[in-house]
Length: 314
Image (cartoon, rainbow, N blue to C red; front, side):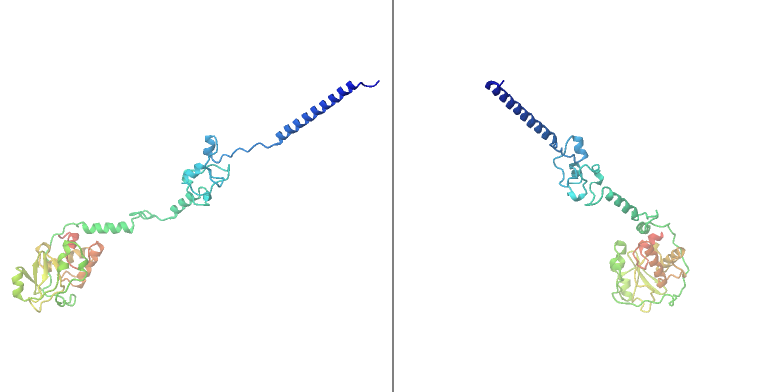
């Protein structure tokens, strides 16, 4: 029995509908499968510990991809080459290590600084590496000694020879208007007499008319002026002087007794090894210069007020 045209038409329509549905389901399945295979979008990596704590990445991350904003702020916006770590590598730098030089590992700068400090010798004023006093402190203490007075020494009277030993202390020659060498560098009022001194030659009348106090030592005249004894050149043309310059008038003693007391004081301190003779000759002047040098005084090689004060004699 043959199918009727109406039934055929129905079956054809049903077949087309089934095929359409199949195609529709197939396309939908392919689309779902494609969606499943499509990779999920990558989330921005958290570039620092500080960004992770705040819940998201910082917008100002360094271009190197490894340095966090927190690190950049700590290191005062240093370039990326300053040693930033890669994304997700390690912890953020500690603040005290953030200033490491370019290309230096974290902590290396601090470690090198510690090693450098440990290798350097101690240079603190007044303390050497081994804990002893430094030369600077010794020099400072030496200067302080010069300013401090020693134990007071009472003046003594010495029986000096009546005639000078010219072999030990040869006579100096007179030079008109001679100045004391180096005195222009001796500062202070107590050295004024040395800076202003110049040798002068006058006869007896002139000396007596200008100075009312004149004494004789080894037959040589000395005049007194403003606390000092000076040689009166020309008063006695043949007079003997072992030294041409001022001598501080210690305790109103005559020049030879002033010199003798200084010689005795320097003997006690092992600066002067010869006899006490009241002559300011080369050996005595050398001993005075040594004492002055060791006590931070101007090396006048003569008897001045600061030297006598340091010795405890003025």
